[in-house]
Image (cartoon, rainbow, N blue to C red; front, side, top):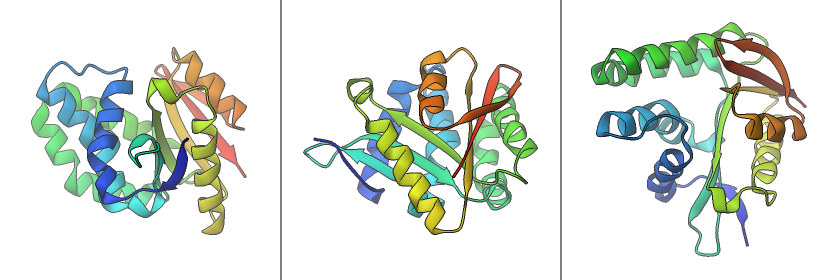
Length: 185
């Protein structure tokens, strides 16, 4: 049975494993892995762990997660100071990918300041785990007076787009192959 609970520090290693296993980005060398961790995990777990939830199995091991930054401007200030310099050291390719994703989110930050990342191990997909994570995050954000959230995913990731639409997200833009989706609640 899967349980949705708040992120705990003990989940950090599993979050990275899940991110790597579900990534559509390369994971061929250490720089790829470092980029995934810096871009999609470390900030959220370290700085905004209180806005993160995991799907845990019977052994209380994370098998999925939803991570959220509730305020883009605050996220960007911290990310730029603490994480972007490390990404830049990985190389131009990683740095430009990071800047591109940040730029896309920044276009909509005034109306949709919160953004999320969600990943679930394939064995747990299609069983309501993702919907439970999304609902938990939405309830959490509502309790904080936040009434919307945005995300981006690849336009080619039709399985994800279908999932987001099922969970009340609508597409507001297609920018350079990124599908920008929002949910208002």
